[in-house]
Image (cartoon, rainbow, N blue to C red; front, side):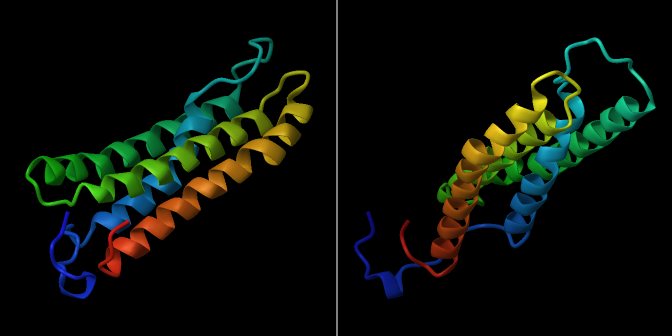
Length: 147
């Protein structure tokens, strides 16, 4: 715990690129999940559309790995305040839920239409809550307050 008042506390340490990397991961992770997780019943053919989805998913997964690797290195060197990892965790959690929703929407199975509706009604609000918590935590860390 800090003994200093909030106004005199040093800012939360982080590299300047850290929030941008969090945003890149939050944007690329749904595409990576959508493209790499097969959510169909196996009865459909492995056609050109599925190949393009798989290529997009693999490229997005590469972007996630390339953004996450320097973040982990900076964290291991002690250059990042630990509270910033919560921002990443909440935004990544929301992104996983959005990616799964995209997968259900584009699945070629019987019942995917009702599953897509249920995902929109029940899962996307939880994802939005994760994004809002991540945003609130990032704003708090940037304005030099404890979360």
